[in-house]
Length: 353
Image (cartoon, rainbow, N blue to C red; front, side, top):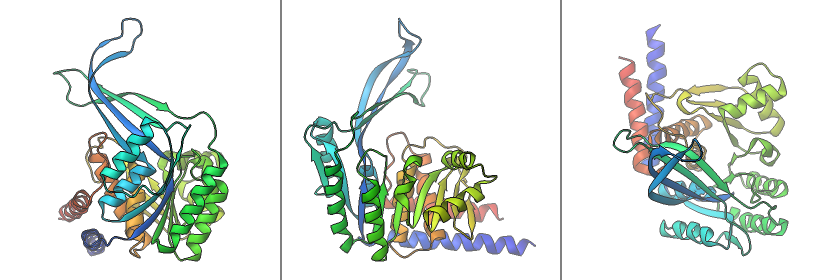
């Protein structure tokens, strides 16, 4: 029945066009964003030889770039779409923290919600990329260095952050918890924030670690990677991904689970439905920032009253912009997101001919 396929494709093309119009006319909605921030450092160089004393590349550095990452990267993505992110995060009173805050200010992002702990270290993730000079154009990630505090976040600091974030919910259109399990989002704080958001009719998007699912109870939607869902399936002893997703949705009282599969596409699970949005790209170049892009897109869509299916479709388009990007250049903007939606609509129409 070819006409059935035509109707399905036309419905998806119409959805993409509707989302494109929404992105183009995005109003400056307010987002309360709570989470852990890091300074992302990208080191590029030539790896023409091995170290003389160990079988590892010796990298001749040619450039170094530094960006505000994790929850701060989500804030950058929200701002690039024209939204107003109110970022509540914790940094150290060190040089890395100063660079992170300065980078946010330069991009016009409000830093009043940042709490500085004088004697604490700011988390820095350094990724070192290398290639053979004049032989290979494509850089390869050679090493990642995670430099972070070894002690726990002081509970009083986290609680003050939660109190400040709660006060901002009165003007918020959506709540995002970007939880890297570094102390900005606590068990008590997460439940206070989600409960307050639910009480005000504000959708909540959570991007947790698997060990922090207890900090997502009652959320509108939660983000997973496909490998995270598979690990959870094995731990629970369940047969399928669908069964695992519904188990989690019912246990933690979510409305939806979004599973990011990179080049394998995106899955939307609810208690009653399952949708797979396939990736139409030929090749994925990198995946750094995939979660952040999905959180940004979900926040943008849900703050406009979009359905979960529409929001998941926009999240997938956002993920495809990341998969196409060069390393270190992951921030969304209206132009790249609109282009991704247009490209997908065009590919779907061509494939149906």
